[in-house]
Length: 277
Image (tube, rainbow, N blue to C red):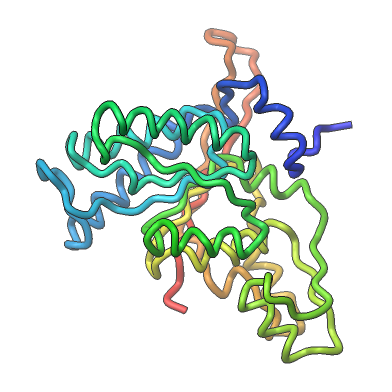
């Protein structure tokens, strides 16, 4: 049987011994160029200060499902390159739901701050992206909404879970889900875990902000087709909050340099933009 990639137990056990692993590569050639482009556009529009010696307000980035990938370090390097050495690295918030991993990573960043200064460490938070109160807590604890979200195969892992059925309103649910259940008390609501994930993320990102997702699936976010097929237009859908800007198809690294017979595997970079809803 395949591993339970959606299970917190699987990841806690795995991270006890794992110090580094890359899902779909390290993101240097797939994720980072799109993050860089968005940060530069924010600067051009006067939203954030890029290239100053002491930037006052770097763009806020949420790296969800950070795991043991080196992508968090690539993001740090990008911020240092764009904003300068004095950038507040706390603008980068790495999130994962495995407490043992987050504790280890947080300690490393705390040590960096203690040695190099209060702005020299990224943030690490422990949250389950399918539990709305935990994601909602980021808004208050980490200073409000984000300019962009980065997701390297996190949506792939979340997609392994079963559909989620909501039978009644509950304070722990996202407001959009509660609004529907309150207005339709005779109905239940069933959504895929990826759609719940997307609805949750929508409340964490500024209108116009981006969700940059690297995935192995060419159909990871089927929100637009499912929303059009739905007979009940009042059902909350991720497509209400996110517009699909672009899907970039890329050949995955094979690990077999010079082998002309290596099979071609493709990965996909989705650029989703937060609607002004």
